[in-house]
Length: 188
Image (cartoon, helix red, strand yellow):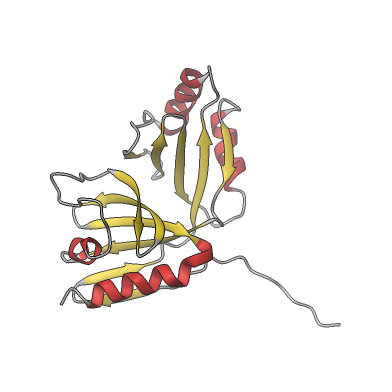
């Protein structure tokens, strides 16, 4: 009997594309855990988040980089994501332990696929397919928004001056990558 060993891997793992000064890559070992604040106990959950990450949970539509390198992204009044590097399949338990049961946590790592886009022309590539106003005065560093790009749902986070993190459904990862590549090539 043949022996097989399966290895979990993000759908766009190994993606590294550079074109016209734009770098597109799939972040390695990105873990995504959703955090839901319990009704009536939001203050306790927010206090636990502050204690665990050394940062206040940002307002909806914002994100914050934490002392340990993770990022908190506020999606709505009672929901957030914790994004962090983790190469083992225990992301939810890590966050759950840090929050000491004060919030509901769910591992979302396999549900999403991530692309990082960077470079002086990255905004031009994104503006071709993203209806969100990405001008630096409208979409500041650490801003986050849910949107649609080429018929695909996307969470876009501005991580630096010329850098964005994009999350989309893992089930349409190839279409997402194709849309980004075509947009990059159409900038020049």
